[in-house]
Length: 138
Image (cartoon, rainbow, N blue to C red; front, side, top):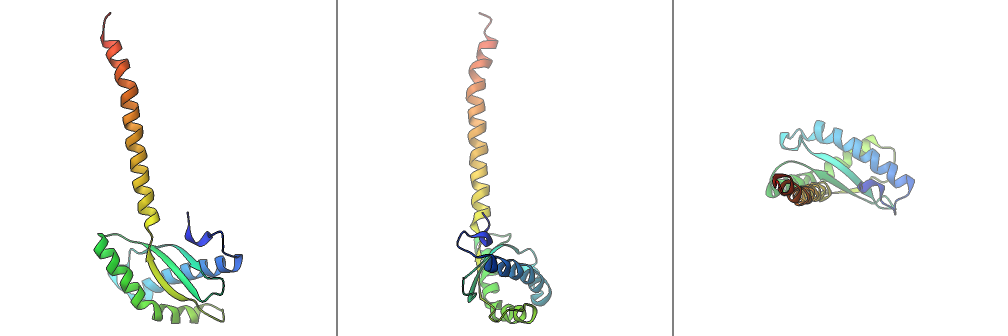
């Protein structure tokens, strides 16, 4: 699931969200110049219908405390980033930015690991009786 393709969004809010995502990636890299934010990936942007607010979903490396601190840094930089977005984008109102850690990727990885473990267990269960039959010369 990508956050920018919400079922409630219009084509305009999706376009604005994608433009915000592209521009923010450049701004974070070029304007903030914080090496700790270098590996931030934006997974999606949800823009309100009235374009007043944009929720920006990010993923990044680190333990939960580090991730929370990086997201807090992004939220502290949000007014600066919004101002710079205003200079780049040609829209009347630039949405107020709110950064959130995107747990969807992490959830997907956990789910994938559970599926892999279940498949491995299932293969073992089905293989064990066959192996014991083939080893038994009877």
